Image (tube, rainbow, N blue to C red):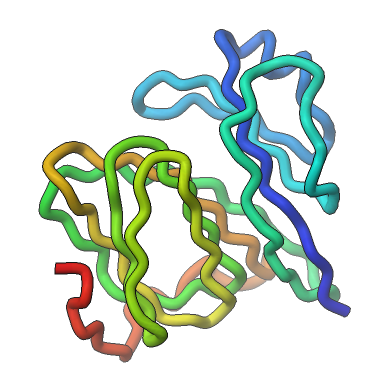
Length: 165
């Protein structure tokens, strides 16, 4: 039975404050740029921690019930021009653009994102991420995938049309 979840991203001034606000569904991370973040995944779109600065809520992400799931949190920092190899996530993939701009191409087309914008890519949808603009691009990435599978297929056979150029 599919269910809907949301990814909440909140900034804190220090790790101790983020840990104090963290629930069992949350993870405290420190980005390459030294941002202290509380990243929480739950089924409540209006959830907020009691403290911290709310950066955004991403979703819903549709996840399948059944096997154990893993939430893989990542950060992508690229300079322009940079392009990630085409791949297909083994679960829904969400991208939250922190700084700069990026473009995601899928078989359905291309979508550009700037700071604080987000995108959800459905499970098994081939995609390619490319930084765009004149500055460094920094994104947060979440993939919720079956624990017994890798988060991506590695290299997708899909060939992008390079719509992000």
